[in-house]
Image 1 (cartoon, rainbow, N blue to C red):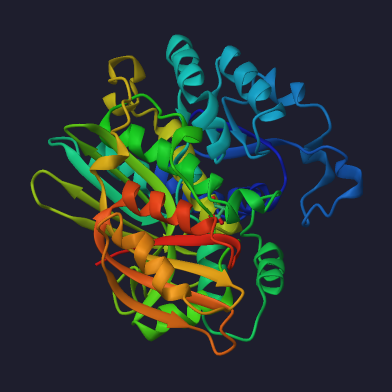
Image 2: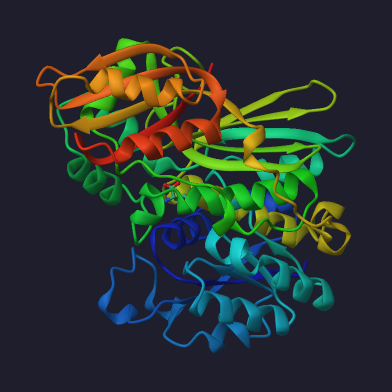
Length: 423
Ligand code: HSE
């Protein structure tokens, strides 16, 4: 029985998890996949200075060519991250006829089309289950389970770090910086944590999801409307609680007759809703299809071993030599067309920081009234430095225009916050 030779590029949080499972669970892996997996080499820059987590030094090399040119390696696992070195090494691995498994959403969301073409030409696999939603096997479910009808909508929590931050901050007593530091210590956050907190990471994942779910070319993730969580104030969490809501960073992708609606934003969700109850680094996804068989999936969205499990699942698929589904036969996918945003109507929450003076509520209410938007509620903090408005459902573009006008009022300090409110 031919062994599946594996090389790992990168020995960070996920690389360590994959190496640990490969070396400690060889028997189970062989039993489940019908072939032994052999970890042959790990590329890690300056490994001499690193904690090798008890692995023999012979596994390690400073030279990626020792993996890319090795005859005994048929699958390369890319866990370096980013779009520079990782891009060139993945290209070379595919060129050399090796399967590639990666957890790198930035790479797939940016260069996926081209890399999939190359993998197809070379008749090898390029699998990236671990790039979206950590341990949740969402891409496998999209291409294997939903093989008979159209998927209409995917909604979910796609970033473990943000969910950890939000659910810790709503408890009170900690600052953003303290909680972020802990998320980094736990191995949830990206090397540049602004990728998490500004929603870029979730936008890249949403682009991959939308492509796989709707059979379209990868949407340009930079064009997906996006906002992050770093501008939230502790007052926002207090106001949310007063109306029975919590703040969660949600990604949404919906295929409509006008094209693709997609967005990544913090939103107010019911505190007792399923999504509102998701805490820590967990991710949750809702998939709606034409046959009304909605699916809800949840699991660890970040962290070493949970993400490594998704890598292992892809390695199993490579080792078993199963054909990949047509979802990944990119050349048959349709172009991605974004739908115009003026179709979207939302209830919304608008919060401003103010220098208190007479007439603030009247002027803000007037700005909303001029756009035909009604107020549902008003809150302010004890020191009257923060005031928030709850709005009836209205076209999101009208709300944005009213907020833009309000942002220029002389009593407004800093940038207003606009969150949509989920029913
Ligand atoms: N930084 C990412 C997150 C890791 O927090 O979700 C998993 O992709």
